[in-house]
Image (cartoon, helix red, strand yellow):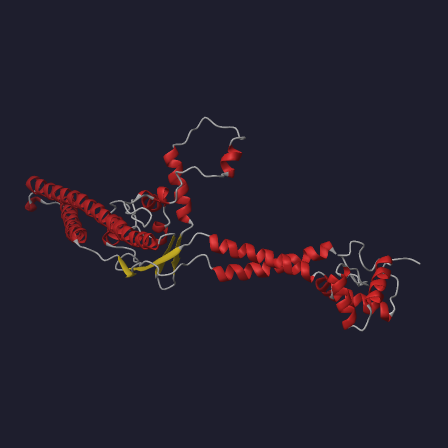
Amino acid sequence: MPLGFDMELSPHEQKILDIVNNHPEILDNPEKRAHIAELYGLSEKTLRNRIAELKKYGFIGSNSKVIKSERKPLITENDEINLAAILDIIKLEKIFILKLTLFFTMIGLIYSLLATLYFKSTISMYPAGELSQSGGVLGEFQGLAKTFGMGSLGPTPTYNIPDIINSRRLKKDIVQKIWKTQNFPEGSNLVTFWELDKPKFFSPRKWISKFLPKGNFIADSNAKLIHEAILDLDDLITVREEISGLITVSIMMQDPTLAANIANYIANYVKDFISYEQHREAQRNRKFVEDQKLDAKIQFELSEELLTSFRKKHPIPRDTPELQMQRSRLESGIEENRAVYITIRQQYEIAKIEEAKEKLLINILDIAEPAIKKDKPKRTLIVLLSLFGGFMISIPIALFRD
């Protein structure tokens, strides 16, 4: 008679197999076997003999641990997944699935307890005044300059606040600046705060680099540390710009006071940077208009001298049609140069006012304050994800084992 799963079990044998599936401990524990046999109205000897027969026919593994039942195929004749067979295997391997799920859950719990704590501080700001507008003095003067052929002027530069915050220049300043923290009351830069200058216990990158060919270029160790700190800082800064123009900057740090100080430093840096650049642009505009004013004045005076010299050589009573035409052209040139000079002179006065005026370019809506509770790690979420992930991973492993 062939062994395996082609053999049909009698109701009594199926009952014994179900008992073993529900109580696998009776395979190795005589006391448990006697107790379970009594619950099902059987003698311990009968139950033991029936288990031996099922082992003989291959329905129970020889190792007394893996229980084999009359299973349904995982793939049906229509090449479809048999969910009922999968559920049977899950029931059969429930102890293994539970252990593996708990293992992953414990890993997630341990990680959440040992992970570095991070605190978040946030600032919000929005552009004000002329920052979000194009034009300005140079923009108003551009059309006039093109009309009179005085050259092309570039548009007034605009400043994108998220680009300034994400700039390497700002991040390098933050990394090198001395910050007072709980661990460093006297102050330290971020390289020291993060202990990047201390040798690591295990560094895979350094270990691998020993086997790679070395080039002739030798980087400065301090520059490398600053570069690593900038990369770390880049992951801790988040900039979000709303449709309304509101810009929110969030800083994550291991020290709540440090996070707040860096966030406020970023706000002041953006204000000072834009203010300085705008003032420098106003100076450049004023200098340009001043140069154009001097040139226009020279052209105006030259046209007056040409007309005066013409009048001395050709008095009006002796005018001929040709001389009248020349006189008219010289007078028109004077009027044109006078108009240009007056217009540029007006723009020059406006440019001086713009240079001296204090402008409100950035409004700080919310300043950063030290966080009162941690932001990361989110322990509850980590444990729940570990629990779910462990369960989802254990199912295919159980199927493979079966």
